[in-house]
Length: 384
Ligand SMILES: [Mg+2]
Image (cartoon, rainbow, N blue to C red; front, side, top):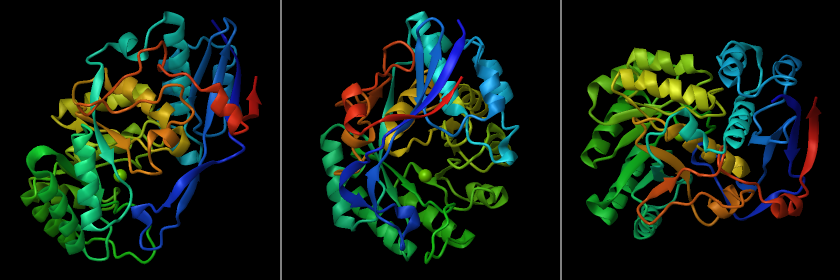
């Protein structure tokens, strides 16, 4: 089997959301998000099999030559040459979406989902519902109870209010509302540029972490800038709450260095953003496992969420030390109806709080051709 052509497909008409939402990490000056877009690769082969993967950047000539005319099963070689982090300083896009498409081809050719080809450990992962906005304590408490009633077992709240005491009050209100019946995570997003926001000092991070411990919070995410490994390690050494981070890592080496520095209990690679891919996710899980740490991937990508989630689940179901998967959820706009609109069968949280790995061959999902037409999807680039 040989790769013959790569296409990039994008929507021309945006998906209009029912209500604009404001990302907490840019508060207090967050711009509302009103629409979602999607884009993906189609990688064609001479045997008629077509692989799909979320778009992750233009295909430069070097990568085109690595793929066109080549055997798609040589995916580890592709990862080694194009994705190992060697181009991280050359301002290249991530090629992880192409790696996902190669795995999709391999699975379709074998008639099996990717996780079974790599070596299955399980077929479902517990979801944590990631919320995105800063609301009142009452609103968050009400939403957490609603989530719990529909089977969701874990929720992530944002901490990005003017005063950290206000964040703690919100977490306390949610804890009071759900009791011991729900796992609570929090994300401080201290690695984001945020105009008008006073970023946390080490002392603030320490103070917040100690309060969160009393509220039995499962992890504190990004309490300090990600490149300040020394400060993260110092914080981690002084508190019992698990420290998480790594969504902005640009290669597996970033996360390896963070692990070696003692910065995190939980690493949070993003399969696309971090140039990680399915292969890199597995390698990072092995590294983390060797140090008795866990991996809970970052999953958030507008209208491409369905493809990203499918690929992430294929990787996660091959490892043991990944207790949760992030699942963006904040009605009415951050819901599968919009984030996974392009999938024929969106990946949903079941009544026990799990998401199941898609079992169709490849990454396991099919694109809904009617939806692609509805949003005027077009081929915007061809590489052959
Ligand atoms: Mg985060």
